[in-house]
Image (cartoon, rainbow, N blue to C red):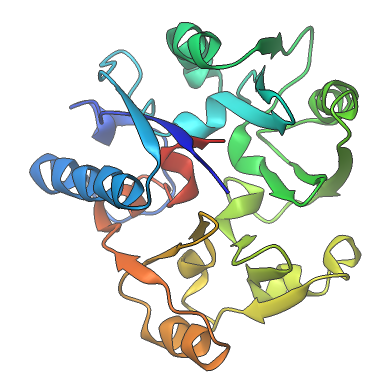
Length: 258
């Protein structure tokens, strides 16, 4: 499903980033180890990984997914560079633009008053689902929809307001037809056509899994969700995300994939 990825080494300033988790500051030695494990998983899956250096001026810059949305197409991939709703993160787009441009055949950039963070964008088949919230606005979604339509993609806006950072904080793909999703999103009309696995109450963090085509990666430490996945025929690999969870980060946040 993916052959390439871009990640960024965590900045030592990570603990100064945005978070509402209330879980304390990350242990940077453990953070670095978990990030290496994450990269190793991609490598084992046969995915070529570009590792960018840390940017201390931007504590949240390890969460590269928010800076762009990759648009796969028949001849390669284009990239839509976002404008993060979190003002403190907007410079991250400039920091990563050159690396993205080197590996894609077209770069499209958000204009005007449009806002978007990649954590609000879920791709299922040929449809992008875009969360409209405090980080991504309707103007940003409209610009994005126009850009991806050129490549044959449909866009479905998913407005919500429940205090979570991004759409994919509580839902993600397990395969092409199945979502792992929190109870508060499970009944949404936008996702009516998918099979859904609803995460148990208290384990909502585990709804952010990473589907790579031949392999599935899930956060470690959520036994009820692990049992539910097993019962439904999914055999994910598990990875410890404790330090990134402290900063509201999940598995999808840490990479751009195409």
